[in-house]
Image 1 (cartoon, helix red, strand yellow):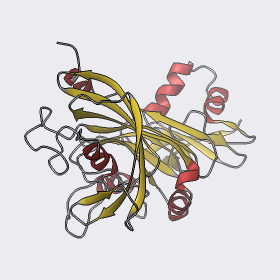
Image 2 (cartoon, one colour):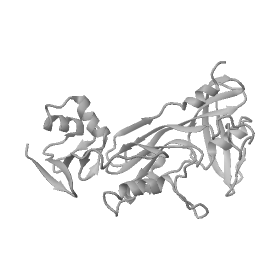
Image 3 (cartoon, one colour):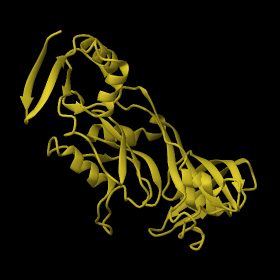
Image 4 (tube, helix red, strand yellow):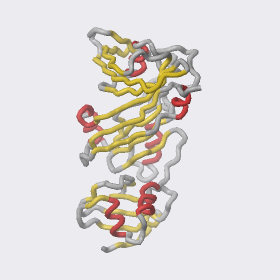
Length: 301
């Protein structure tokens, strides 16, 4: 297979041309037969593999004839470091991140500050100033966990217009006040966004129908660890629905008790995100562990 080493923007790359369909890991193994699978995986983890000039970390990314695969010899130029978010996946079309609590997803007219969106834009523009991310969905400022951004408008529109068909599993973990009475159940109400406060009604009052499925994982120390599955994704939905049940999310001063905040944060984390890739059609599964501080709060004394 023909290869060529050349300089580009003062960085060294090894350039390979894809001649037949195959997954990225298999392709890397074919052009680097001396490298172990662990070594090849480390190249992806270190973000030094490009497909058609885009960093690609997905080991089974589908390659097609005519695509160009590059391996950078500069192992530091493309690393991403931020105390506010972590990139857990990136390809030519989208980025999945793990957001820390306290970070806005995107700025608003009232709030002009550093956000997940601006941090990712700065990262992408290091390669090309025209690059940017496109918002697909949001997490509340004080909620941590998994969310995704599109890297072009077409992918953004595909995800937004077909959200319920593409996203097939989206779950959160929360610690709520008190001992949840039921092991599992469903909350259904109609939510109305009143800017600073979301109102919930048990009957259709013109708001948006909202459905949250819940499962109680553990009860201890006056708290309950909950797993929550969103059937709809309205603003503040989980926080409002937990309030409806009489068990507000710990640390929720808006829909709960301001003085119940043993963690110094909102105890809500988006730990699972599964969807059909909007371009490749592949099933994408992302999951983070339950936050250790959540589990500690409901651990036996």
